[in-house]
Length: 200
Ligand SMILES: [Fe+2]
Image (cartoon, rainbow, N blue to C red):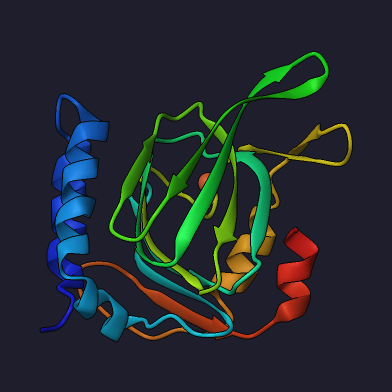
C-alpha cells in the first residue's frame, strides 16, 4: 500500500477549517500513522537527513522529515499551529516560556513511534532525535513554514534571534521530486552532517 499523500494533504486542509483545529489535526495525523509501513516506503528512515515537502502553500505546509541519530534543533517557535506524527524513532521535546532571562523550561515530552503531538501557535520547543534509530515524522503546519517570520533561541543563556528560514529553505531545495499532485512538492535528500552540526 502506498502512502496517499494527496489524500493526507486534503484531510490536513480540512482540519485547518475545524472549530478545534489542534484536535482535528491530531486525528488526521494519527490516522496516517496507522499506515506506518506506507510512510516508511514513501520516505524511509536512513542515515542522512531527508526533507520531503508534500505541500507548500500560504495556509498549509506538510513535510516529512527524516533526521539521523543524534540530530537536535535549538528552541524555536512556529508562529502557526502544528502537528507532528512520529513513524520511526522518537522525538524528545523540551518546552519553554520566554522570560526576561531568555527562556524558562516548562516541560518535556517524548513522542514515540505512532504518537502525535500538537502545538499551539505560541509554543516554543526544542527537539532532538532520541534513541538509537533515525527519527522520521510527518509535520503539518497551519501556515507558510518556510517563509513565516518567527524566532529561535541560541547561546547560553538562550537569546532570541530571528529564525533563519533561508537555512531551512536551502535544505528543502537541495533536491526535489513530486510525491503528490495536489501541491508543489520537494524532496531533499542529503547526508550533510555539516548542516546537522550547524543547527545543534
Ligand atoms: Fe518545531
